[in-house]
Image 1: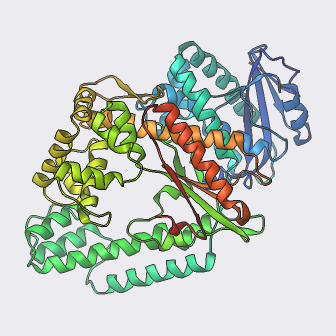
Image 2: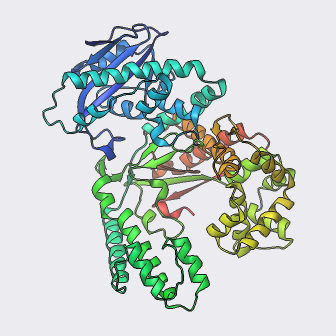
Image 3: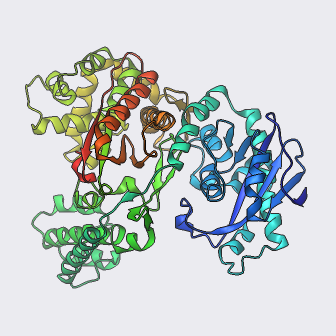
Length: 567
């Protein structure tokens, strides 16, 4: 490999070129933002000269370097990172001629490795049988002089050199289905996610909420004669207060022992300990530290700009980090989401799919009864299911509806009766009765589940995304049921997001500020709120029905002032 300190030569449309950027002094939890780090170098390695790596050290040469390779297909490992930062110094429009070796690897190998298994060094080790030395990477993070050493230049050049080789190896093995998932879903979703804006936050309200949670936790903790953060001290306290043979202090264990010993002194102590943990967790995870680490200013507005992984789980769902928006509480308390608000003169347009996974399950199983129920747009699906399953008439606010809804979700998640009871409450026997009744009511869906549970190699989403199964895991049968449903839901949402981004034709920039499973959040000028909501809903339904023809889908939007207003 030759390292050449120069702008790369002009490439043609048949060329492929790997590109890798290195930054000085970047903050790890802000890597998804174009506000951290300073330019160090960019490396280029093309298939026309695979043994040469061109290194651009001068920031002023970036635009010319990218112009020279513009006609070629660009290759990155984690394109969202490189493109986000390259856009600080050059205009880069969404392009189809793109290959992300990290995302492609996740598409080809979903389910085989954990998140770290898709880092460049691990992919290089598996595909090329080469071990990379990543120690030099640390020297970029604390480099106040911002001067490149020969070792650092070689490190960046090797990244580009090996990324090209990984791409060549992937291209030999990728299937048509895998490539279609990349081309039609993940690539376009990635461009959309790169253009996400930060969500505005009311700093004063968040600060007040954080302080209240900390004060409540302190008050509860003070009523105990132990350190409530010490599992051993908590265990000893509860053993002495009547919880015989308590094995640990995990929540599910305490719940069981509270059922076994409702009259013991340990019962009340456990209530206090669990309540303390709730408030302490809120104060820690959603407290002042979140503002300290993640608060940004965007267009003179205080925002939190979460990072997103286009393929963040084994079955293709997008995940969120730094901070994780998908974990902001909603069911137990809406106070946190209330702090996320629209920009001045704007509204939040929040749109989500209706019973998405239930409809996907109906398509996968082709259960006639289930499809027929879903085709009735005038009735709530869970009310209709309850009537069919239990032979009773109820209203939407009846507790029976929630029981039916939990049963449907539990079945879609592939839960056992034990897991169902643990998550939703009740006894294992009650859970099994509800699951059995659901299967008797929708026999074609049950037949599909039986067949899925037999699979031991891999399963697929409707669009063909493979999820490899671990035959030695006790979760194999559950994953074989859940992955096609959850993965198909993710495929639909990402296809919709990509289409929304490509078709965006409003007199203001693309302004998605949040993406949580089946929900997207846009921050738009108030006068366009309903127009944007109708556009988003239409594209979400269209993406779903492309993948599930014959099964109707719904998507509803709500115009809000803050995130908590959407049910």
